[in-house]
Every structure is written in structure tokens, then in C-alpha cells.
Length: 125
Length: 125
DNA sequence: TCGGGAACTAGCCTGATGGGCAGGCCGCGG
DNA sequence: CCGCGGCCTGCCCATCAGGCTAGTTCCCGA
Image (cartoon, rainbow over all chains, first blue to last red; front, side, top):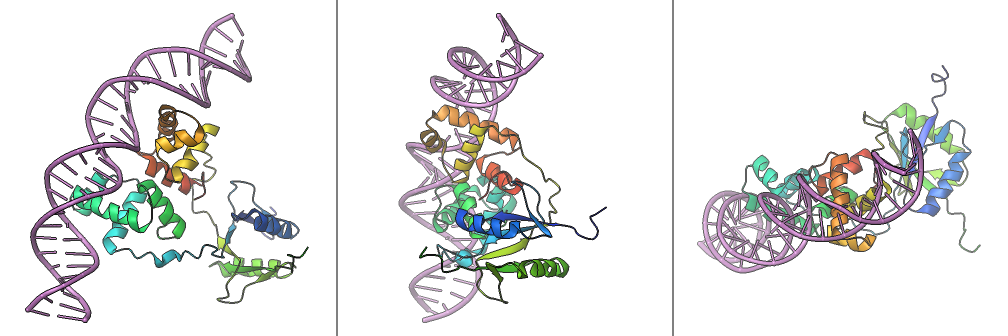
């Protein structure tokens, strides 16, 4: 019944830097009207890091349209064969694009490539 | 003591819902130690909406400690051999845990498993 | 008109992957 | 005490993945 007037905003702190995360936690801990989310708890909003320390220009990875197609399918766990079928190309071509992706994303394998792409924001898991 | 030149944390509010954004703005506006970012200003952290359309919340897939170890390494693109080396176990055991992970995450392969885990919030890419 | 990048196809080959099967060791709880 | 689940190991085997070289079209811009 107390949900109508003051729906307390649950804030999840998703920041890698423990120092920064800790400071934010203590700063926000004293603010009434919002609450910090417990680990894994479904939050209303999330606090994410916004400064790019590594200056790795996220969306600056220059992928060809076909490579993006392959990438999204890879992110869904599709095998080369599945990629080939869904894209109407041969397995060889699928592998060709995957190899190109691995090089551009500086990954050692498809799993690594998907993780990198997700981290860089190239794809949205 | 030399390094604390009052590093005010700049927070950018990136939330579509104007009501929620406004409430957060007023709540955070009075907190000393942090400041709201001006439009377009480079912020330290950002507040993003987490309004979970994710019906599958509270996923907390029941993973054993060892399985979590293997999962995070998988997310880094580690091969079974690399997992085995870093965990001090045999390749066979690594495969054993991977197989268990695939089953629990309902994945067809390690790439799929990592993607699922990331989507479910089990791991943080 | 020509060069070059993108997309596509192909074969070959080695190592990685995943599934199945059969065990052994250990700690907790019935 | 014994079963059970977590954890670990071994072997076999079919398939997949990724690296290699090499060739084809199409289209755009110098």
C-alpha cells in the first residue's frame, strides 16, 4: 500500500572500479527515496561507468555489413553451419567472415569475439 | 591525503522516463560529493534504466562454485586447455564442468552458454 | 579503364569441442 | 553406516573450428 506515493527507486551499482563503486555506494546510501540493490536484485536503474579509461573507441570497430550479420548469429550460439544456412551462404564463406571478425575484434575464438563485441557495445546481448 | 582534491563524481542521467529521471535528478541534486552532468557533458558514471522487461528475473541458475569459475574463464574466451591450466585441473575435468554448464544454461555450445549467462546476469561481461 | 575492396566459394589439415561411458575421492545428511 | 551430490580423471569418437592458399564475381572510385 505504500507503493503509490513513494516507490523507492532501487539502484544497482554496476561499476568495475571498487573505489568508485564504494564511494557511490556510501554517497547514495544516505539518500532517502532510493535504495541500493542487493547483489542480483532486480533494480529500477543502474549506475554504470561512463569514463573510458582504455580509450578503446567502442563503436569505432569497422565491420562490414556481412560481418555484423555473422556476429549477431555468433552471439546466439550459431555454428558456422547454422550461420551459413541462415545467411544463404556456404560454410566456407561463413568461416571466412568469422575469421575476419576474429581479426578485427582481436579475439582468439568465437566465444572471445562475442564477449569482446558485447563489451565494446558492437552488439547487444 | 594529497590525492583527494574532492573528486566530485559527475553523474549523467540517461533515462527515457521523464518522471523517473526528474525524481532521480532531485534526489541526487542534494547529495554533496556528486554532481549532475550538464547535457552532453562527459560524465564519470551514468544512470540508465533497468526497468526489467526481463520476465526471467531472479534467474540465479544454480551453479556450483567450480562451474562459476569455469564460466568466467569461458567468457574470456579460454579453451578447455586454458581453463584446465588456470584452475589446476585436467582438461577432462574442464570438459566435465563445461558440459554441466551447457546443460544448466540450456546452451548448445560454449559461445551460446556465455551469451545466455550474460543475458541472465549470471556473469558480467 | 583499371585497381582494389567486399562478398563469396573451395579444398586441405590440425587441433579443439562436445557427447558418451566408466570409474574414484570426499563431505554432508538421512 | 551408507547414499548422494559435488568434484575429479580417464578414454573413445564424431564433429566443429580455425588457419592456409587460391579462385571467382560485383561494384565503386581514382
